[in-house]
Image 1 (spheres, rainbow, N blue to C red):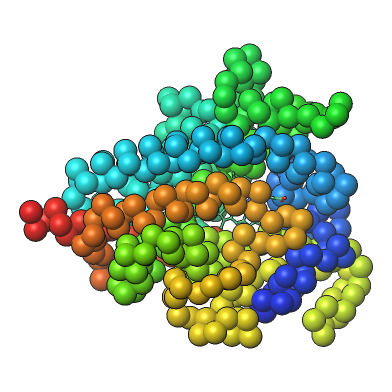
Image 2: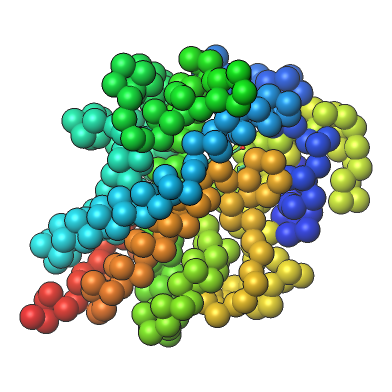
Length: 368
Ligand code: HEM
């Protein structure tokens, strides 16, 4: 299928802010795009998800969702995140040797998401399995993807029904009650919103924490700097997102008309991909883009996207990253990789930059 890839920083920002590009592939995409099965969420409630609709529907959904992200709730998340990180670190310490992906980043991201949404603990393991189906680590399991998405929508529906009956102090209940004047989310919109949070907010964090840990193992000087200078933590997180964020690309955009963009003529209905991680290494924008430098000041990057659809969960993602990444190195100051560097592999997925596994040894434990 003929697809356009936008790779420069300025062009990626221009693309993501330009209303001539639509997120509604099912409406504006050319027949080839639709027939290839690339319309996200087609045939499910996810068709109504905030990620794949344009204004005015997008503006409304996004406003209702954001009303549930109050400062009080975000402050509560901080405590949940810290509690989860400490408990998962205890489990890793007991193991001595562990996999950053499956034993640290995975459990942290799914436990935090479970707590925030108010998921029953006994459903947790099944949700992790469904996420593994939705974001498989190799191409041979691609045909399971739709089932993974369906299962996640089913969990979301179950969760919404449960919180309607038994309201609690969590994000799902807040979304059930979210209102703007007389307007509220319909049942399907609610399910799509909760499913979108699960889909957008679990594996991304897992991938990002893994990438950040690998980057810091590769750069011992930067790792020491992070531990010595807690004042750098917020800026360091932005640099780690720039250097190796979780999403290689944004979701598809399609052109709503024939147009000229960045010196190229694009036909109507053309699929266009914003290459976020390429933009984040654009030498026109960043000095020495391939260098990890936690002291970079005033960093602007597109790791969370840009424009209307920019990451709705960025506050939570920042909170989790800032809690999970330095804490791992504080707990295990002599952490080392337990596989040779050239055996580190990424999953086969062009949109998600995630390590398959990253076995490490808490060298301190061994020395003791
Ligand atoms: C490090 C972790 C994360 C990264 C790198 C990330 C990245 C992104 C990016 C690049 C987009 C824009 C996609 C596009 O324009 O097509 C996005 C959108 C979104 N993200 Fe995140 N995200 C992360 C964590 C989260 C979390 C924790 C949540 C949930 C609470 C979340 C929920 C969403 C939602 C709902 C959208 C769609 C927003 C819209 O379409 O208006 N994300 N994210």
